[in-house]
Every structure is written in C-alpha cells, then in structure tokens.
Image (cartoon, rainbow, N blue to C red):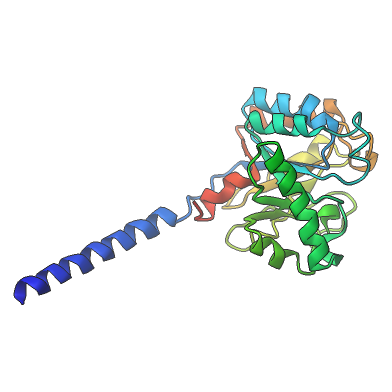
Length: 263
C-alpha cells in the first residue's frame, strides 16, 4: 500500500512538472522594440515583379493578402497569376486570405463570407500552398460575424485598418498591442498612400516600442488599378532603406504567433 502511494505521488509530481514546462513553453516571448509586419493587399502584379524580390534581398518577411476580386481573372497586367502567387510562397513569404470577391465582409451573410474564404483556401490547396491562417478585412471594414467565422475556420490573425481610432483618409493608425488587441482585429499602424512622405512612414513605424508591433498596410508598388492607395517604387525604396538603416526587424503576420504565446 505504501509503495502504491509513493508511485501515485510520483506520477502526480511528474504530471505537475510536465504541466509547468508545457505552460512555460506556451508563454509569449517579449516583444522587442522595432518589430514591423509588412502586409500587401489586392494581388497587385508588382508584388511579384518588384516587392517580393526587394524584400527577399534585404532579408525582410511579409504577408501578401490575395483576392480574386476586381478584374483579377482577366487583367494579368494589373494582377498576379496563381503561379506568381505560388512563387511568393516559395520565396518564404506568407500568403493570406483577402477573400474571393473583395466584398465588404462585415455586411456579408455567413454563407457568402464562408464561400469567399473557401475559394481562396481552395486555390491555395490547388497550387500547393498552405491553408491561410491570416486574413485582411476587404476595404478595412470590420464588424458583423467576421471574427466568429474566422475562428470557426481556424484563422489566427486578421488585419484591419486604422479605423475607428483614425479616419480612413490619410492612412494613419495605431500599433498592435498584443496585451490589448484581439488577434482577429489587428490594427494597421499605417496604410500607405500616394501623398505619404518619409515622415508619415516614420510616424507609423516609430510606434513599434514598449511591447507594441507596427503592422503596415501597402497595396501595389505601384498600384495602377487602385491609384488612391498606390506607392511609387522610389518612395518604397526610401521606406525600406529607413527600416534597414535603423535596425528594424521585418516579418510576416503569421510570425507574431511567438509573441502571443501560440505555437
């Protein structure tokens, strides 16, 4: 009887230690200053022809949010092909879901939103890409049943714009604070616009401190199909040089998992 009690006590102690070790492994890493996430929306052709090669050369990560909306199916001078999208994955970049139609997800029915998510997921599977775990709100419109549906489908991160903290115009925003913000409603610290100057970019990335991560939103570089959110390559080069020269770490959205205590 005494031996059995000792054995049982040993098992309890072993399980307790294992629980502590497992809990410690799940604890988030401290968020370093100067941590940046770069995201690129709307499947612009320049993502493959210009943006990805520049990021790769500098050792930067990034997330490309894919939609088949607008005239994606027919306009292959303005939008990437799926082979080009697959090429981004092969280069090490994250492919995220920006929905099939680029409709206002906050106003969609459950059935319509599910169908739009499923189409991009299916396209990824057809081209040998992982199922997306990151989502970007089309038009930065939040609300409705989006978060509920994303959770059901296993999404871990979702990027919105700078609203409601700032108006859409101007592209200002706030940094992502893992201690405060829902991971399925991550704010943009900046949403780049044609009128942006280097100081606008610096204002956005300088928020990456005190446990906060600056998530930046870009579209095409350039984006001739959506000129109101286009960034010219010369200006983008200034942004990249600033990040490199000032010691910023640049990653994809999926990679913030280690700072949220997620495997």
